[in-house]
Image 1 (cartoon, rainbow, N blue to C red):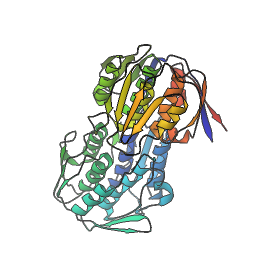
Image 2 (cartoon, one colour):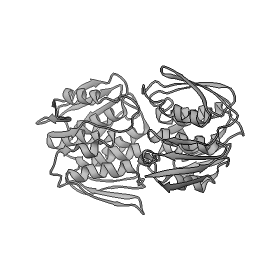
Image 3 (tube, rainbow, N blue to C red):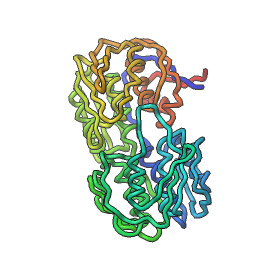
Image 4 (cartoon, rainbow, N blue to C red):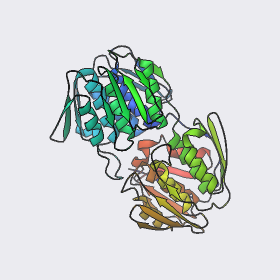
Length: 420
């Protein structure tokens, strides 16, 4: 079991590059199952635990997979997939594993997928996925913890999500591309990762219009081929480095992510007193020695991302004044608050809102990560604190980042990975 040993008090500075977006790569790995010929190639893929889990899932289904961790290139041949069951021991590790259901159902007419697990950040039901499959003509049953979907041939339809769902939009997209006729998704997720998945599917031969808007139209085709693709940069990893720089009063240039993918975040960082500049595929932040407080409301894209809420709260903990964070996506995404309080943060919670009164400084302490982004938030808080901290359960962090400590070391952070 590993932990991070962090010594705070160092201002981060320098340049860093982000890898491909985990949340773009995972659905593309699932989408590779749609190709009945050829070899899919994905470039710049991060070597994190979630990527390895998804590759293990499709390997279990019979896909031939190779992950060159030095070149960060993944190759997938799904032409000989011979199983339609994604087992519990793999799917329990990560909710995104449920994304194999759409491609399996579309290509083979049957899928049996364990009900998903993942981070403990609140209820994330797959009911909108299920209703979407049913609208496309699939028969759904649940047995022994598995969801089973069957359809001789999916048929195009019009479906309306109750609210934008990132993975729900992706799963329905991947099932509709081989359905008979036209499918329209209303109130679709507009995230950059969804747009990138659409570009990937169109390269494979899919017919999709409206990606990046709330209305996506898919016209089914008879088959898809394997292609090469370089997914977009990880905006959440970029946001991590930006908030790390903000909390430590640093100056950091992040390459590999266009500013428009983080527009709501950059707006709030400017509110907090940081100077932001950017170009086609880079963002630079120059932070004051002490930030100013601001209020944050999480919302589906293009709103402020819930995945960066904990990191923003870490920075607000040492900002001047009082800020309020209103979490509107997940009802249980304040598990990091207790750990931030152990570091000296002054935070109170009332329902789905947290009030943060900035303190002059945090103090090093022993804390533990509860999910990917909560863990990253604790790293940020520890780097800005006085003294030494120990962050346990870094396996949560490793799900979403490839050796986060190594990249932070390049920016001057005093952080080491150690074994218990």
